[in-house]
Length: 155
Image (cartoon, rainbow, N blue to C red; front, side, top):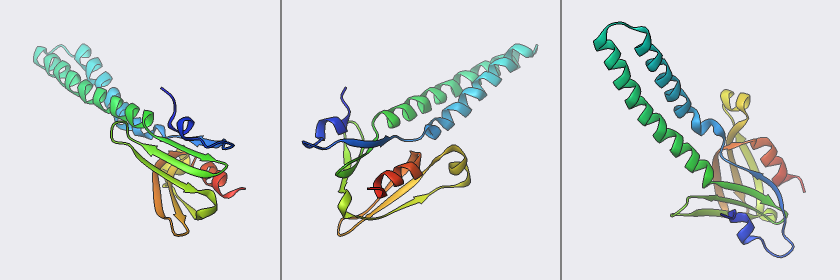
C-alpha cells in the first residue's frame, strides 16, 4: 500500500522530513506481555493445583488484552503519517475514516513542542502548529518532535 504523502505530492514538491507516532503507543501491550510471562512462570513454579489453574487462566485473559493493545498500537502507527515537504506540513490519521491536516509552510506562524520528562528521555511529544489565518493543529505523541519542528521552521 502506498503512503498517503506519495499520492498527494504536487509537481516539484519533495518530502523533506517524515515521522510517525512514537512506539510509546505499545507501552500498555509491553507491560501486559510481561505480566503474561510472569503469570505463566508463576503457574510453573507453584505446586498448588488450584493456583496453577488460576495463574494459567489469568495469563490467558491478560494475553488477550495484550494482543488487543498490540494490534491497536500497530494499527495506530500504521495509519498515521506526518510529513514536511518543501511546500507544506501534512498529517494523516485513520484508515477507513481518514482525517488529514495540511498547512502551507508560508502560513505557519509558530510551532510549539510539549514534552513530559518521559517524553524527553524517550524522544516523543506533542507538536502544536499555529497558522496565520489557518487555525491551530496539535499532533499528539510523535517521535522526534524537536527534529520535526526544526524541519518546519528551518527554510
